[in-house]
Amino acid sequence: MTQPVPITPEFQRLISGARVRLRGRSAFFATLLLHAEFVPSREVVAASTDGERVYVNPEVAASLPADVLDGLLLHEVLHAALSHVPRRGPREKKRWNRAADLIVNGMVAAAGLPTPPTFIRDEHLERLSAEEVYTSLEGQPEPEGEEGDDLLDGPPGDAPPKEGQGQGRNAAREWAQALAQARSVEAMSGEHGHDPLGAHRELARLAPAQLDWRAQLWRFLARTPVDFGGFDRRFIGRGLYLEALDDESLRALIAVDTSGSVDDAAVRALVGEVQGVLGAYPHVRATLYYADTEAYGPYDLRPGDDVPAPQGGGGTDFRPIFALLDEQEPDVLIYLTDGYGDFPAQAPRVPTLWVVPPGGLEDEGFPFGDVLRLEEGTA
Image 1 (spheres, rainbow, N blue to C red):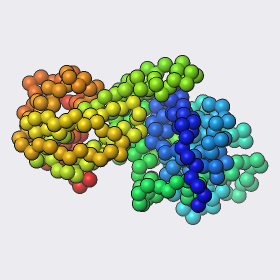
Image 2: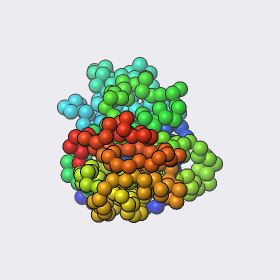
Image 3: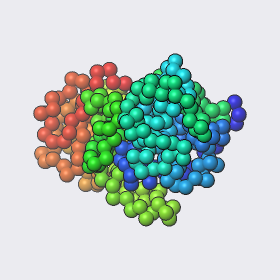
Image 4: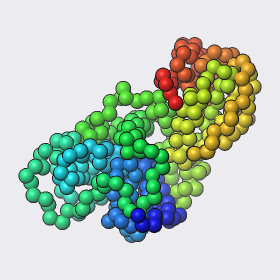
């Protein structure tokens, strides 16, 4: 393995710029880009994916016009999101790559972004599944001048190691979750006129019923107008998009019931998922409090940080947390509890999400807010 290519500020700006520009085009595609991990590599021609991460040649990326770079990154992210690497199985690699390229390039073109000069659209085939397109290409000669394969069997030699074990096994599930979250954000953004799900079987593979509690949590945090709307696009050309995003922060207050009725696994699951949201959405800020009959905190939550040790252990009273809302002024409140305690007399103006572990209070017992239920065995 050669020395990994460092992630420079210039590389980060290239990726951040593409993410911001995609926001102005499509909430659906922008959400997928937020989930992607981009890694610099000089061993790829322009960009490639192994189904987990997207590898980008930093020198090539820096030389491309902005819209071409956006189309290139979206192309690779769609390959990863649609699990085109693990779905190939024993199929012939080049023909599978051609089939997958035909589909994702059609989606990129539909988003109004450039595709490779050699690409010829087939609006019938691009709406089918990759498996169906692969079968239809049997016996057809390979087009001249076609780009090389961008679906990798593994990471390039100059890519840093992946964190954790068994990542390949989890990647397809994580991308399916990302697709569900992207669809939720798109529905809330009102982009019904160019919904990609109705036209492509690849994107219709995920049914709404597959949304689990994690997707619902992301949906709650993504529904603020600052997420994909209200951004002044004039900032982009002046290189000020990161500062603009910082000015449009969403502040979330996370409260965890430590009266003894919520187990550690549920706390870890919720806080870990919130940390994932913070890593994907740079504009979201979160503050953690523990609570029984008092509120303990605040603790700033950041992606990857250790979770502070819980405090409390007495009875349950929700009112101390709600008393903090005027002082803290969060945009949303997320409260992990079984629901058995004293509620405030009046509903707050802050949108509230109650996260309830198995065995908690029934939905109708909560006098206000939305209720999200954790699954059995959440950890």
